[in-house]
Image (cartoon, rainbow, N blue to C red; front, side, top):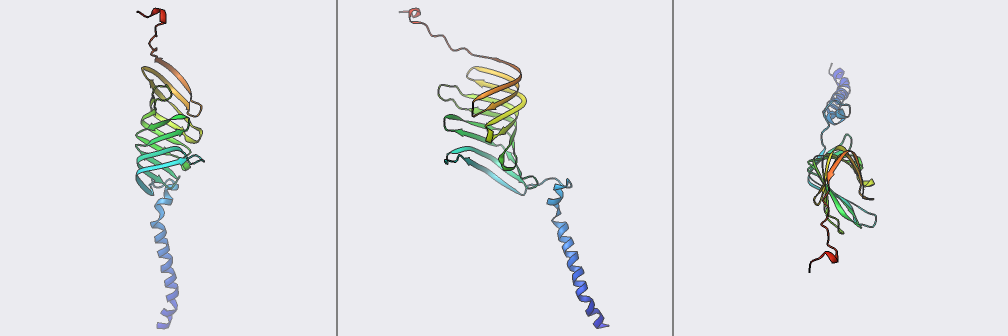
Length: 200
C-alpha cells in the first residue's frame, strides 16, 4: 500500500505545480485584461515634477515638456500630464509655450492634446508685441510645428483682440489660419506728426 502512494507522488507534485501556475497567472492578469477592455487602464509608473527635452541634431534644444505629474499607461504607451507646459524653441524665433490643466502624449510624443484653460504664449521679440492665445482644447504635433483646434479661440496682441472658432497655427512658417466666426478689434498705432505739422 505504501509503495502505491509513493508511485502517485510525482503525479501529485505535477498537479500541484499546475495549480500554482494557474493561480499565479490569474494574479498577474489585471494588466493584460485591460487590453481586452476588462479592467481600466492603470498607470505602471508615476513621475512627479517631470521634465523631458528633445534636441536638434546640433545639440540645441528643440522643445521642452514639463508637468507637475506624469502618469504612464503601458497598454497604449501613452502618458497623462497634470498641469503640463510645452515650450518650443527655434534659433531665429522667440520661444512659444503652451500651458494647460491637463495634457495627453501619444506614444513617442508624436501628438500632444492639451485641455482645460489652455494658454499659448509667444514673448515679444524683434519689434513684435507679446502674443497670447487661449482656448479649451488644443492638438499639437511637435515634429510638424503645428497646433490646431476646433474650439473657440481668443488671441491678444497688445491692445488688439481676435476671436475665432477653429484655428491652425504653423510655428515654423508663422502662418495662422482662422477657420470660422472670426471677429476682433484692432488698435491702430498713434499717428506721428509730419515735420510741418509739429508745433514750434
